[in-house]
Image 1: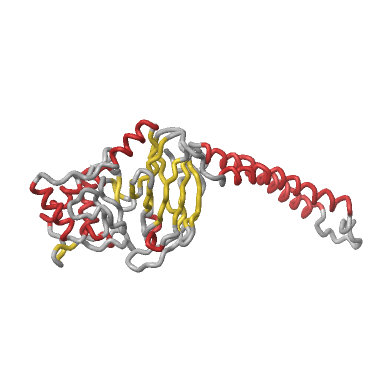
Image 2: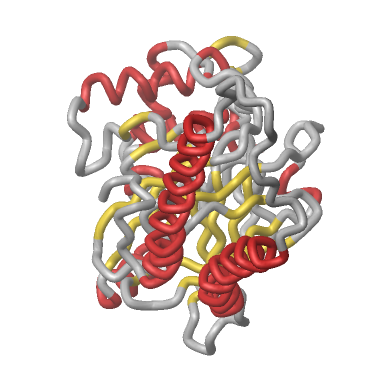
Length: 341
């Protein structure tokens, strides 16, 4: 789907677009009338060298009433539907609403489905035809502080599903979205938040209700234990390379299920995603990947040193026993990641 706020694909975006359809023609009409009147006055009443002053309108009660009432009526016409829409979109979530907590990191988005016990990164999966209540949760310092860096503002924006909403550290802000059709809806951070602000992308993937339930069930499954020797080696390197210090993989033998690390993206189903690195690179394991070889090179480069690719990224270069990861170790880690479906 296009990232176009003027092509809405759900009732929330349609309600906001309707306000634009109302206000934009009025604004254009006012603009044309004001500048046409200004042009007429400049020409009609220009200085022609006459000695007498033209008729003065200052204090003309009838004119004062007319040009006070007309703008007031225009404001009323715009304000009534605007206020109605604001209150409607700000209402408390319906009993059947799906509530999803969203946390902004540097530079990626984390989506938490608390009821289902699922955490995803940069991919927001939703069912079609259902009210989605988004809670932009900046209330917990641990949600936003990474490696001692202070939290910053972001802005959550899926142009074709809803308008922007600022993510404010220390506060919880709400918004709602809804998609009527299955599809992929691109989103991005709309508030400058640092060096890689433009690379803080994400995608909303809308499923039919049946497909969404199947997706939830698949995400609730833990990762399979490694069987192949190379995969087993990658699983072990995931620990010795300190990856496990930031990334959770549910089912990994060295992960405490009661205290998984949430510093970095949850990688339990990494191979099922279509993109990685804040959604700037296609995943080599994704179904939609156009160039698998290039995608694999991007993944290898990302694991080696992400900061060289995405300035400001907090993910350190991968090391094993204090040395940069070598080619064979990298192959093993990637082989392990490929099993995380």
